[in-house]
Length: 370
Image (cartoon, rainbow, N blue to C red; front, top):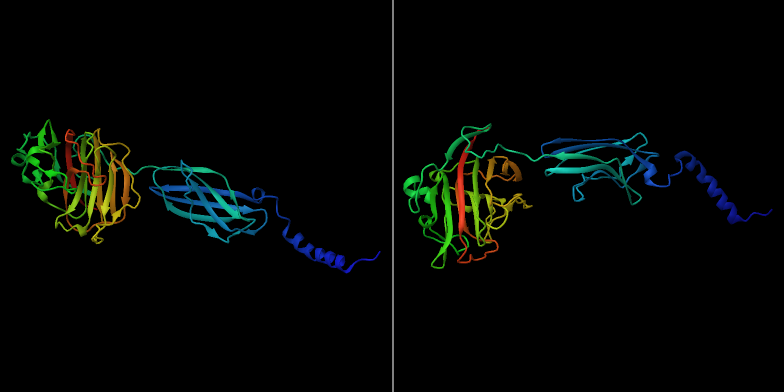
């Protein structure tokens, strides 16, 4: 039988390819039968989670990407960094990486992208617990590990309206006679502040069309570099008013920074923040953390808000549980200021009928003592 030249060339090409097929083996029908999990594990230390995985392939191939994939409770992708063009060997290829995670439970699994398809390995879970700090409903007395107590106020001495300065010193009267940050409120401590039943009380209200507010300064205006600050307080819901309890530069130079906690409108939840030192421009300061996280509850019930400020950064706690943190850290003396004012974000002017109370049960601070 006569064989065409074209058919002969096709046959020869097929034969030539045969040794390669015999050497490498035919590809399985899908990545699901190509890859398998040898092992996977997760080690949690605080917010840092180190994962290790090993994946093997029925035949050695080069992946497009190789990683450990992570999903949170809402199925958001929080994958570890991907290794590109990585050989996945028949004996197994290892992967290891470390990343930071917020408190919560996560699902993780080795994952390989090959021929534009993703393979997912054995699924497991790890849990990151919220960082905590000591918390008490009664005023703490004494030093803590890494902190030396240097101020405490339990408000045991009563002081009628207009008498707070006489009983507790002028610093607790704080700002007086000028406008607040928004310009809508007026600092009037003698019309706002009093102490009774072991509580410092702010009675925020309007007189003659002017919202009256107050900003006590603790510890006689004494500042410090680094420290721990803890306060137990509550506040009525008051639309148009807010609080910003803060560490403020003793020099009054805003460019040195600002540490806010708790801060928020008095009809919502609180959020922490840091004005980053050295970032002052005509439009204001840069603030951290980049992602805002709010307290789990509003301030209508009693809560303990704690700030821990060290050379390595600032952490903010709500009822002993970490809310947020930053690695930015001011390095000059700051004083502790308990500012109540009219709103600055939404800048809603308080209705003249709006009034209510902020109550402070106790406040204490510590110097940094590593």
